[in-house]
Amino acid sequence: MNLRFLETVLWLARLRSIKATADKLCITQTAVSNRISAIEQDLSVRLFERSDEGFMPTPAGLRFLERAQDIVQACHLLRREMLDPGQLRGHVRLGAVSTLVPTVLPALVRTVREDFPHVSLSVTTDLPDRLLREMQAGKLDMLLVSSPPVLGPEFEITPLCSFSMHFVASPALGIDTSRPLTPQELAQHPIIGYPPGSPSQARIDAYFADHAQQTVVIHASATLPTNVQMVAAGVGIAPVPWAAVRREIEQGTLVALPAAKPPVPVHYVAAFAREGQSELPRAVSALARQAAALYCESADPAWAWASQDDDSTQEHP
Image 1: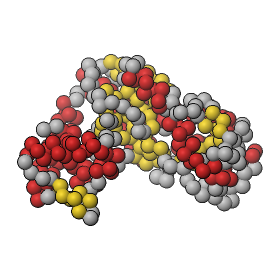
Image 2: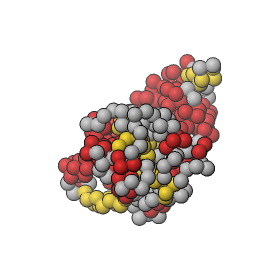
Image 3: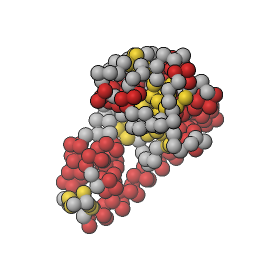
Image 4: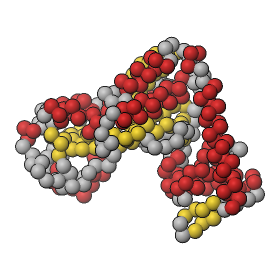
């Protein structure tokens, strides 16, 4: 019986929705249904019944859930116990989005040095889609990127954290910050964005979808620091993670623009190949989760919070 299938049953029991379960596990709704059906056929029992409240466990399903939870927890515990940090040696090629460089990465590097003294890291920063192509081509071992990355079943993801997004501008622009600004009012200023077709730019396009005719987007570089420099120079405004620019805001280089429609938060994950010659990416991914939690503990929960998912890695279709 596949461990992933057991985890799917547990999440469906918790969320009571095929769609919510599919979103949680980053798989298709068809995959969720097929996994549940496969277990039901294997056991010759029905695990769920559909009701007004969603998918509810049957009496047989409740018995199954109790044992399945024990099995899943035991598997994860066994995996952790079998991993000997002192025996891990080698080099990990890590791709990361620039937002995580000043936030999560410092704690990750410190933790790797302490827990895995014989492991070294090399870091490449770029847009998520470019980093994904590099990993799929075998040029990177793991990623720290915004989600959801589009990966095949041979890859796994580990949720890390989420950052709230805020529009910022140079104080030299003299934008009124005494009241929330509507998307239409924000769109009156040049919007500093990212290369067309990138996930980061897609979020900006979605935000201003109803004001596309009047929005002027300046497609800037693939890295957040360059965009922040352009904002500070008064070229335009930009939506950025508060966690990445709080120092500039405290110093007065940037000002936060209150928005009547807040931009959606951005979620970050670690991604790596499920099968490989080394356990290093999986081990570093677990440390990245710890580093993200440590960073969020020291941050304002309004602009950075750790993932509340369980310790299991998750997969993409």
